[in-house]
Structures are given as structure tokens and as C-alpha cells.
Length: 266
Image (cartoon, rainbow, N blue to C red; front, top):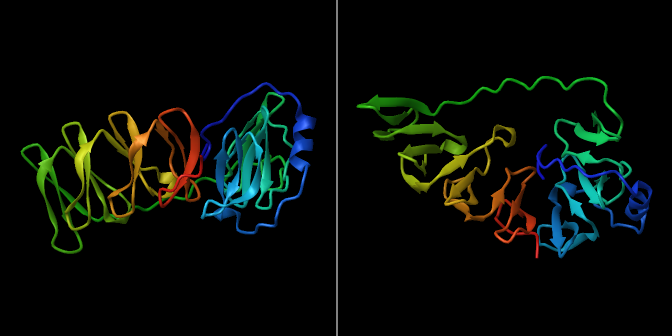
């Protein structure tokens, strides 16, 4: 449920009851919500610290990552937002809700879709255009006999012309393809991940961090050095947002992992 993706839709009902449940009880103060990770135990969700210790209690039916000190939560079929202390920022009233991005989130209420700010107020102005991104080039592609290689600008590393496709990525990594299989090279031209993977996907919105890798229908993640952070084992894997990523296990259970590959679900 990271970024604007899973945008769940449910029939609106029991809004007042959901809000009452959300307001029930007190939560410990927490100013470092960015370090909290959605934690699922059984069918209930709360938030844990980086040692997997429960900080906000298991009282939600689903929970999203903290971005800009705010996170969406679901009680029954409806959504609302909380702060790092578990305090409500909005009522639990939305039939759709997204993770905050660029100080705004998209919600649906009474069949109408609009955006709100960090206080829950409706926004009437469109978002500012995304700043232009200037990609740093590590070197130049070389071509010979229909094959592609790479010559790094810094250092003496040269990748021979043996690949069908080469893509640059963050941290000096190259994604390389031979036939239908992908692998990874570092900025010295050394293989860090063999050409055994069906896809490798990096997303600009999270600065291309921790790309998703696919192998035989299972998904995992790359670490910053181009090796595997998590070997492909998940049924589904979403891009990282605020240092956490939502995954679905082979038996259909959903939860989050952090940038060390630790799982926050039982």
C-alpha cells in the first residue's frame, strides 16, 4: 500500500463507529514516526519500532507507512489518517486513501475524489509540477556487432560488448540483459548479480532505491551494492516508500519489510 498504489475501495458505512474506535484509548508519544513500520499480527495491524517491538497497538484492520509524519489506517471499510503518536488527523471516513506525497494525499468521500493536506483540509490548488531531474551519466554505451557494452567515465572500467541491453541505475550500478535474463554490474564492471532474473525494476519516485527483482514469478529486492537484499520469494512486492516496502507472501499474507529485509508481520 505504498505511494498511491493500493487504493482500496469499499462501500461507505459505520463511519461514526470507526471514528469512535480510533479515538479509544491513549497512545505513547512518538515523534519519530518515520522509524515506525506497519506491523501485522493475525488480522490486526499496529506499528512497531525497528526492533519489531510494538509501539502503537494492534487496533487497525490495515495500516500504511508513515510519510511526512502521517499514515493512513483502515477500520472496517473506511480510512483515516493518524500522526506518529497514533492520534487522529482526520476522521475515519474515506472510502479511498493514499500515502502522502509532496504534502498531499488523494482520498475519496461520498463518491468524490480530491486531495487533502497534512491537516486533513481539502486542497483546491493543483500540485506544483515535478522538478526536472538531471540524471548523472556514469559513462557511455558502446556498440559492436549488434551488442552493447559500456565505458565508465571515471576509472578504467570497460564492459565488453556482449549484452543486448544496458540500463544505468543509482549507486553506479548497471542493469544488463542477455536474451531474456537480467543481471547487475557494479561501477567496476564486475557482476554483482548473475543474469538469472526475469525483470529488474527501479522506480524514479523513490530515487531508484532497492529495485524489485523477479525470478520465476517470485519477487525480491536489490541492495544498494547490487547484491540481493531479499531473494525472490514473495507473491508481490511494491517499491520502497519511506524505507519500508509492502509485500505479499506466497500464501497471501501482506506485510512490510525494511531496508534490512526484516519482516514486520507474523
